Amino acid sequence: MASSRPVIAIVGRPNVGKSALFNNILGRRVSIVHEQSGVTRDRVAAPCEHFGQRFLLVDTGGLGIHSREKATDLFDGMIREQVAEVVAEASVLIWVLNCQDGITPQDQEVSDFLRRTGKPVVIAANKADNDMVRAEAEGAFAALGYEHIVPTSCTHRLGISDLVDRAMQLLPASDAAAEAPEERLQIAVVGRPNVGKSSLVNRLLGTNRVMVSDIPGTTRDAIEIPFSLTVDGTELPLTLIDTAGMRRKKQVDTVVEFFSLSRSEAAIRRCDIVLFMIDGTDPCTTQERRIGRVIVEARKPCVLLANKWDLVSAEGVKARDFQAQVRAEMSFMNHAPILLISALSGHNCQQIAAQLLHVREQMRVSVPTAVFNQFLQDTLARNPPPSNGLKRFKIFYGTMRGCPPPSFLLFVNKKSLCPRNYLQFLENQIRDAFYPEAGMPIFIDLRERE
Ligand code: GDP
Ligand code: GDP
Image (tube, rainbow, N blue to C red; front, side, top):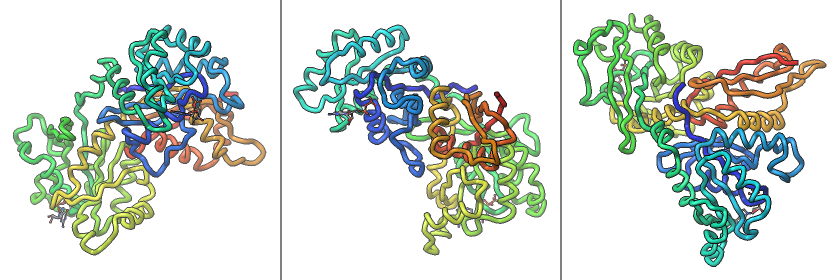
């Protein structure tokens, strides 16, 4: 399993401003990539990014909201266990304190608990709404003996970026190293003839282009070409699994290529990420459906590249309308992000590298069990499975098994009671919550437990 994205957990007693801080971090410096799903207040975890560093932010104050009336005691049985579990999986803790209350006995309890975990802690001395409180914030909490104290005001959006900076500095070196681009991802560029695959491949390879005969051990059917792309100065090492016909196109009979889906199929099965190219001027034919089916069946992360956008936009077609059309006609690919590009002019091609980097990061997200169960409870409460006759399908709890691809195990009352499409619905919800905009396949297994 690839190293996972570090977890940063927000902890603290009730009413200090944990949820306000969570939303502040999501809304400000940090960009959450998925806009459609909307960041709701009651979400407990969200993938975040702070100046290129990615992490999963968890608000432990949101745990157990279905098992209690109101946030009362952080250290109540179940909730305490859930918090402890998230804390155990976290790389850095942000401990929120209320400047206006000083140190309370409950804060002392939290302090003892946090110290026992041995995790790096940065204190958010929150509700430091004015200069006077801010100036005194550090001194007020110095007695707790923690080195990193950053005054914040969620109401006035002050100190938030400094706080996240500090948390980033405290990430253990092994986690920081996990962010380094050490793995070489295998990518496959697939699509029907003439959509522009060769044009794109040549553009991506650029001067790094390697002649087929120069690569030892290549077979006629699949050629692996190592190359790199750069994203904001970061090198992204990749291997292109080239299917014949892309680079030596002229020697290949298009009709033959048409029927040799098997070659693309082999590349799809072998790669880590599929770049599925479609022709913007004729985006959704039966061939796209065939290729799409292979990608979905192989459960590969996929990015849709709508090429020849130069021709499409010249006709006055709006990006939004075009995307809506593709979504409607290729619903089986709805989880895949779409980039509108021109391999000919290079328009938006830079985005491909950024998107690949994003997918790579998402492939590493592992969801703590407590967070996953909170998510399940929220989702089930909002959209309970429709009743199927007399008996209702029940999900007791779930856990993540591994990634990539992200796979989850759900303990249920009876598999046969699971309504049609409900698993698909859950998959989409999981994707939106934890793997936005990465075209990620999600595995869900059910196990019966009475
Ligand atoms: P949680 O229980 O720790 O998640 O706390 P909440 O985020 O729900 O906040 C508790 C209350 O404190 C809410 O009424 C917030 O509006 C308020 N609050 C949060 N941050 C600040 C702040 O920086 N200044 C002030 N004055 N109030 C805040
Ligand atoms: P392949 O069969 O998928 O490898 O497609 P090619 O790369 O050989 O491209 C097929 C044709 O489409 C060629 O004539 C390219 O010049 C043209 N083409 C490729 N990309 C673009 C593009 O972005 N815009 C336009 N207008 N033409 C393109």
